[in-house]
Image (spheres, rainbow over the protein chains, first blue to last red):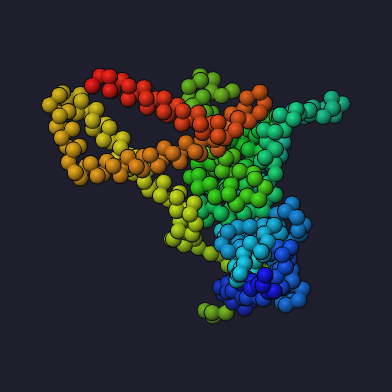
Length: 247
Length: 139
């Protein structure tokens, strides 16, 4: 076991340089350390000017997504020991503008997420006196997988389509739309269909499948998009064949 | 214009990276994806040959014999072999991807992926056997 390992970290200080560069830090190697521990070691002991996002350290908040040796990863769940002997390359996520060092701007995703209406839509809310909306375990099971998304943006970084066509709504937002479409309490599928079946919605996806591979929560966004393509196509055929449309 | 970056506290100067032309060489699944996209040309070729065959068939025995002779030229034979391999590649990769798009629920439980893939392969084999049986019996 080595006593130290080298981290090659992207630095981008817009007040100093016009393009990102790499800076290498030698950090102690510990078996139980993840990349995020090493970055925090740098921040606390070697270079306080290094910027990166993190919060929960346990794969729940989705803040610490970065590219480790070229693959999008949650740095709180990626062990140094898997990348020996190093140097380990740590870069900001792809396809998002870099604000500083490892920090990217997620405004584009936030806007798209809101577009797909990721909340329960009811035609008419029933009065409180009638109690809660009940669901069976099987009904929960149909959407639970998609509800595990933590908005960490690893899937956007892995998606070449999002890189080439930034208007694409993208994997996580579509998976989250599907999460509400599949929810037995929701009645907003028709509203979401309008947004999702447009050019920038599901049809931009060419099923590279990398979003599903990098997802740390096993959400399977690629699956969500393909399932939704089937739904949208069926809807289209029905609208074409049935005299009253799909009403 | 100065080359110094203009940076003010409240207007961050984002750095936007461009996707490289060679993005599809970055990892294996990107390459496999681009290969699948590009080789769909051969699938189209397969379909065109099939239409050509139907036309020859409609034109009568002489035209059909001519079509068969044309197919037996080494160049078309080679092209056909390559096309066949790619059609097979497409068939297999798409069969393996079907459980992603098709979620079948039986009595509230999701049918496992291997069962859906297996059923697809089974249907493929059964249909192929039926077609082979009809053709070989006729010949």
